[in-house]
Image (tube, rainbow, N blue to C red; front, side, top):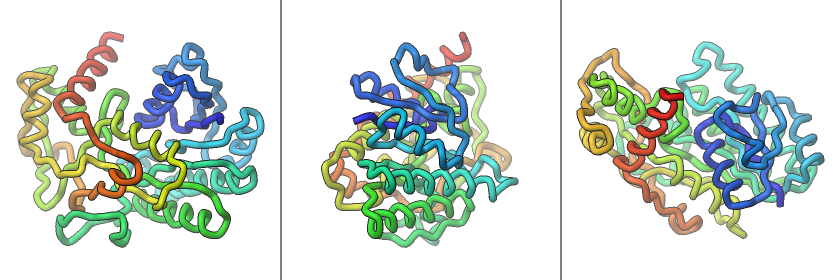
Length: 309
């Protein structure tokens, strides 16, 4: 069964594509343009450009390449992007998803794996752990598109029989992440011999998960014969303090340090408690296995290779 992977220019989409191609599984890729960092010819992966939300592209790729399953990582990847154009966020995130769900309905596709976000939970009055059945109350337009997308996934499944699942991913990091990221910034600053300036985050949580652990969850969700749920939390299973993160990154980049600064990096914190991952452990066999020190080392190697290139 040919698998379509969208958003291959992003962190998760690229990692999923490489994993599937490395396993010898038939894959086709989509994004606005073919990313320079992925050698699609060497991977043996066909590519079709798709500027979301263009609905006709979904039908074209399904018919041309015999697509039967989809990993849809193509979207606006976080609230740090297009803050001055919220309507465009909705257009891309929800318009793109609706087009895919319609294609899945019409062509009777198999499993669709779509990416929601921890941002769908919104800001909470406490930092108590949250399971998948906690009501979604997003406080950003980006988070609202994820909550609304989950409602569409649920409705298309219940009413139209579309087999789709949403993964609520925490802060994903690793080689290939170019948007605001605490761990990559710590690595870059540590290599440059300077302290990272970080906005104080009292009353918020940090939940970082390495990209290859997320890919493990994606492949499990893609291949599971039956999934009891339409949405799963995907995170480290615990919250991480800034001191803990800095100490772990320091193992990969000696001299790493952070100082509090109100004007410093403010992304990668959440006003929500630890994501419970028991459902993903049970149904997907999900076990995050990469510690921050190992993930930071992989990120360091990518940062150095990128600087050399």
